[in-house]
Amino acid sequence: MTEVERILAERPEFSADFLKEETRCEFFCDTRRKKIWLVLLDLAMEFDRFCREHGLTWFLVGGSMLGAARHRGFIPWDDDIDAGMPREDYEKLLSLMPEFAAPYELQAPGKTPGYFFTFARLRNVRTSALNPAFALQGFNMGLYLDIFPLDEWKPDGAEPYYNRIRDLCIDNSNYMRRSNPYLPEEGRQRAASWSGRDPMDNVREVEALARQFNGTGAAFWSHAVITLDAFRHNYFRRECFGEIIRLPFEDITLPVPAGYDSFLTSQYGDWHAFPPVEKRGDLHSDEDMQPDIPYEEALAAYCKNKGL
Image (tube, rainbow, N blue to C red):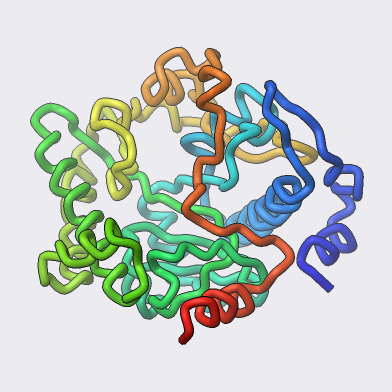
């Protein structure tokens, strides 16, 4: 039984009709994409259940919050779910890692061997989101839900800290590429540019920089451990998070901060506006997402192709 089949059998919220191909916002959503979404929704439901059981606060952030507010579900060209948690809840979550059972696996730096991203991920280990750059790093690469801690933040004068976090994240990414000698030239160049520093030292420095304003009553929060956005788009007024509500998301509801309009405006500006049609493409095209294939099978096929 594939994970898609299991989810349809165990989750009454969804029917096989969910997998039907359709066009949304001038973007074609094929059955494979719908299967990916179904696995991600199952991950979100399991994460939501777990957090409720343990009294942990979480909410959608980034593109997933935008999807809930603007699309009542996934942005049609998106293929992951982003979650945020107050730092205290995030740390408690990591202390409960062993309580997740297959097919779910929580991964975090310093706790999952070979995993040196600076945030946590909840994976479905019976699916695959193989990224060739890190394919031989040793941790499972199933489809995933990203989990970012949010810390208090004082933006005045903090851009150098943010830039330092970005450089440390890139350095860890370069380190993990070193495990794969079969990268294309650009990947080999990135691997060769690793600083030589222990990746866990980088993680610890990121944590220290991100946490430095906690306990100060700062007017903003930031998920500064991840720096894909420009500095000015990655801090949010703390009152955004004063209340958590639930919004429709596909066939279920998921939590968002009541101040989601302020949050999204800080991150995206006019978040109601759609990107041009030509820019509505896959956001994670470097990952081979396979909802019907366990990661071990996808990895074995990759290794066979490389003659390993």
